[in-house]
Length: 268
Image (cartoon, rainbow, N blue to C red):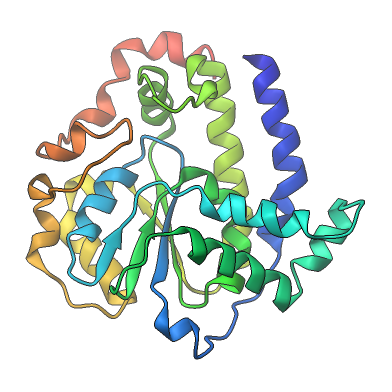
């Protein structure tokens, strides 16, 4: 497991520079006919599925779950560059509007089309691209979901993810992964003026109405009470939170780690 985390560090070293790139792009006429993405990103088990259920109940928002297409679109665009495709070359390409357009085109070509003005993409790993998302998708909203570290690490550790998340099998690895993700997002967020917000899991479960209203105000959408009726959503949730998001909000989940505090803290 330690070897896997080392490999993740190499990936962060290679790609984290995206976080320092990209100024907001300008909407084109073609963009106005496309659904604007709402990217929910950060650590797993921080309320992203619950938030998607709530926002996805809005009549103007299409929830699409964890889409793999942004990383794949980048990979495809980078593959079209001439060798050696090193870090400096990719950095310069990310400043090229045609390269960014290729990424955007590849992304939209792979998603299911919707006539709603907004769509939700909640792939946690999109945090790698926080700093360049607005250069590709003008008007996009990036929502970073954050939760107290002990609660997040413990929840990841005890969750049997269906799609891997190898870091979660060891508390030390989960702790390090948490720190790396939060550092990468903070680095990118410091360069963003708008279109980015960080929300606390604790606020989402304790005062969801106020939080949802604030997010909808940014999108210039009216509040709809159905957003608070997440248990009535009929859509299929395929993440590890598929059961929890169909249940009433459990406000005491953040204290579940406390009986195991000595074991957890010793491994941080």
